[in-house]
Length: 497
Image 1 (cartoon, rainbow, N blue to C red):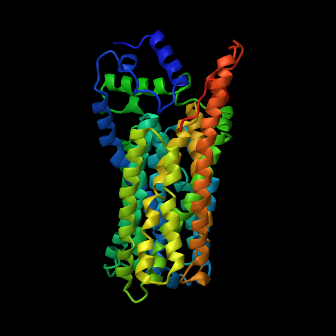
Image 2: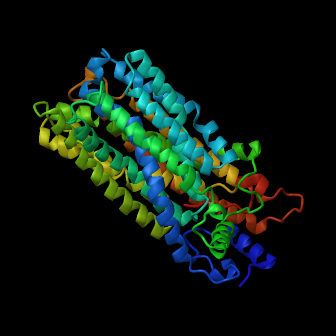
């Protein structure tokens, strides 16, 4: 059956009043295009054509930014005559440009479309990774890392924004988790790949750590070229969807959102401000910031920590010992995000993913037994990678317009990278081998997340209740700006948990 204007208005009004947990799935009668289409089949096509490619993009992006940790114990520090805080400085330089260009990069993605933005950015960071393997001095390393941060700045928010053009709010968390898992697998794969590359004597004048950067950078360049042809910008441009499936893909997103008047190509600074200065977005960003201190801390320094736990083992064995915790993290991220999808809840999972991480850091700080310490490194991985999916889908669900959603995701990921900048100084050489400062900082950050997430969940319930009570006595004024203009300030808006 076709979608009439009345049907469309009813579905929009319904979406304004509903809570994404308390209502049944969207009515196919309201959403069906001219020809009946199997939504599950259409969603499976999206999963097959999009998720593997998006996951590979994030996998290589995360490897290219974090492989410096593997290179550090493979001769980088010695060859570039780096001492003291030089490694921390090179990490910080990357995050400075990453943070500064986070929001501009995602707004550029919104303007030109992710179908063009992402391939160009991938090609860019691939070239910069190759250049990292060719540097001859510490100053050159810092310069290359700064430019690398510019090209990587928009990758994660652009991927989340890209997927939000295809999937509903309840579907988005699990799909985002599938590419966030790549961050976990990047640590495992990066350790395995570094171990394998180090077994190669040399390629021409390139050897050891230089090969790590060059080979991984070449893979990213190849992926960027492929994405120019394989990555569709939005459902309407996907050659593998039928016309009816394209109509359904668009209709089901419109029925869920508060506003359908804005096209994907429109832009407004007023909507950008509403996306940034949103209380749920800002609070969620703080949670993601604190969690990212831990994520980037283990990504950059796990090889160093493992080296202090098992100093007598060879470099290749130390690299391999960094792999198992990441596999645990990948499984935990997938399972938690799947439960979040099925329960259509995010807030409650943001509360309960942190306690085991707290336990892990307490164990590490409380003992010097190497086996207990190595076991303790597994516990943080049970929760930390899940926050990438939970927080990004949470901010995407709690804005009304497409522009506000783009800005909200960018702010959230900018918070993530501020956490990364902090993590660059969490583990300093003078704190070795116990790293009480770094591990204590992560313990405090994860504990704070529990309280903040609990407070946010409670505030959403209270504020939705206040809005319900006010709307019961509110007389609609024809001069009141619409949802398109007011976004989360509109009386009909309700926060999603």
